[in-house]
Amino acid sequence: MTRPRKQKTTEPANPEAPLKRLDAAVIAPKRERRYRARVFQIYVLVAAGGFIALAIAARFVPYFAVDLAVTRGVQSYHGVAFDRLMHGISWIGFFPQSLVIGLVPCIVLLATGLRWESIVTLFAALSEALDVLIKVIVHRPRPSIDLVHVIKELTSHSFPSGHVLTTTTLCGFLAFLSYTLIKSSWERTALVSGFVVLIPLMGLSRIYEGQHWFSDVMGAYLLASLWLALTIKVYTWGKTRYFVHQPVAPEVPATSASQK
Image (tube, rainbow, N blue to C red; front, side, top):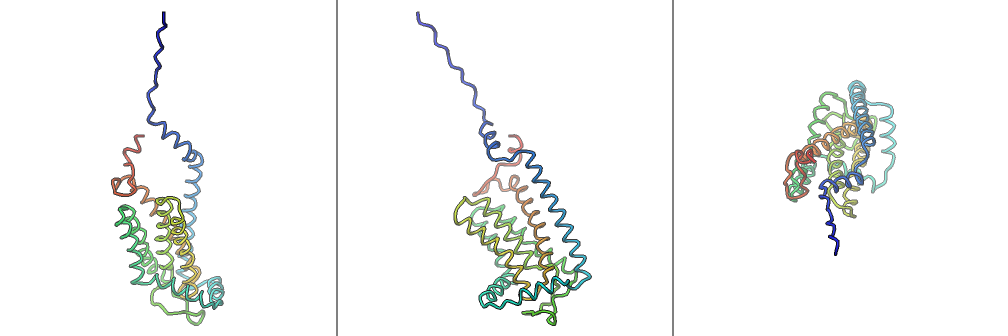
C-alpha cells in the first residue's frame, strides 16, 4: 500500500514583508532618526537666534570692523577673470534677469510634469519678498564710497543681501530636487554642483562689488537656511497630499501611507 502524500501547506504571503525589508535596509533606526531631528531643530533655533541678533545689531551699527576688513581684503585682488566672474554673478541677481531666472525653473518643472515641485520652487523664490520687508525694518545703509570701492551706488537698504537670500533659497531647493528626484548620474552631479557652487560665489560677488557688507551676506545666509528648511518642509508635507497623481514622480497619498 502506498502512503498518502502529505500536502504541503503554504503560508499566506505577507504583503508587508517587502516593506519591512526596505525599512531594515534603508530607513535609519528610530534612535538615530530622533538624534538627527534634534540636531536639525537645534540648528534652526541657533540660526534663528543668530539672525535676529545680527539684524538688531545691524539696525544700530552701520558696519563692523570685520566688514571693512573683509571687503578690503576681497577687493585687493584684481584678476581680470575673477573681476568678470564677480560682475557676471552679481548681474544675474538684479531685476529683470532675476525674475526670468526665478521663473524658468518653475516653467521647466511644470512642463515636465513635476507640478508640485514647480509650485514649491515658486514658494522658495518668494524669499525675495521677505528680503524687502526686513530691509525696511532694519534700515541699514549701504557701504560708503569713502570706505570701500563701490561699483555702483544703490538706493535700497543693505541688510540682508537680497541677491544672497534669493540665490540660496532657490538654488538650494533646486539642488535638493535634483539630488532626490534624478537617478545617480553625471548629469545629476553636474546640476547639484552648479547650484551649490553658485551660493557662496553670490555672497563673494556682493562683497567684491562693494554693495553689501560681510555681515549683510552672513545675515542673508542665516535667513536663507531657515527659509530653505521651511520650503523643504512644505514640499515633503504637500508631496503626499497634493498632486499625488501627477505625471512624473507621483507619491503615495498620505492616508494610504499611514495605513501601511
